[in-house]
Amino acid sequence: MSIVNQVQELFRSGVVQSFNPYSQAVFSKISKCHTSGIGVHYYQCTNENCKHEHLQYHCCGSRHCPICGSMKKEEWIEARVNELLPTPYYHVVFTLPHEFNPLILGNREVLFKTLFDSAAETLSNHANNPTYLGAETGITMVLHTWGQKLNFHPHVHCIVSGGGYANGKWVDAKRKNEKFLFPESGLIPMYKGIFLKKLRALKGLKLEGIDLEALIEKVGYKKWNVYAKAPFGGPAQVIEYLGRYTHKIAITKHRILEIDEYKVRFNYKDYYDGNKTKEWSLPKEEFLRSFELHILPKRFVKIRHYGFLQNRNKHKRLSEIRKSLALEPLKPQVKIPAAQRMLEKYGKDVFKCPHCETGRLVLVKTIRPFKNFRIKLIPENKASPIEN
Figure: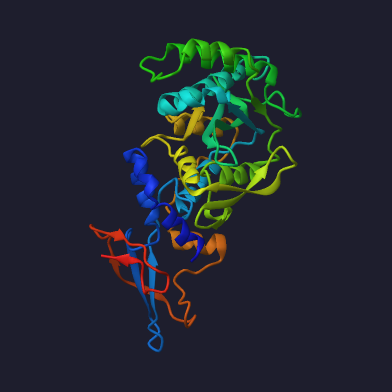
């Protein structure tokens, strides 16, 4: 049985029934990925001597799915690349003390938003300081909630422009030849203060078993982590970063090495040991419960933009900035078919018949998901695990 089939079977485990309804729906959707439960395209070869039949099962499209990829990521990246400007770009990471984990797990949506807003306000305050820039910088943030071993570790990765926008004009970066955008010694205490102030102002938090004031006092004595990394080498590095981090999920099928009767074995990168790749195992139930920790609240936006990249009037601002820099106007977004993207990116012609390699696959019909679809586990030597 392939890893894909094993993951599908794993996500149908009975322990999933103890999860909240939304998480159950996500697990159910993933378990049907690339099966008739999602739907299928039925193709046939145009070569009269071949007439090969090809079934293309649909992917589930879930942003949490470890099985399927999505061309939507490529579209998103192209839109962001179109917005890049001739200025240095920096990578900054804001984390939260692990003592907050129980509080966050009970109040995910509001505290994830507080994390975003606190990091953005910290960066904006520094950017608007004439010592560092004296302008509004452009910020793209992406939320990650996991560590390499599937532990709960909320943090935001930020791409920050070195230059900025003020009073209708572009302001060049002041620290072009330095290794960081803003000093960590200023970022850390400001970020801590802003987050704790926002936290105290929140109403209606679920605090079962949590003494909020005692928690705030405890983390107040700790040094919080903000990583202000060296600037990207150029636009190519920014693009590569966007591809790796923005649509990343807790774990993909490529990291899963083995699923047996009792455990799931997967690889991880040990950042404390020279980024070496190592192996880790979790009991099946613990793996599923750990994975469930990283399912974001329904409709929660995990990629956000601030500063001159904030959504309101963004196109107008970017047009003004590009004009002041004597750059070409923003290019209109063009919808590129998935088949063309596959050909350009991987050199794979998805419509070329894999059997005769001369004919073309043409769509005969689309089979929609079955309303009463269910999957029954049966021995591997049987014809099909799919029932109707």
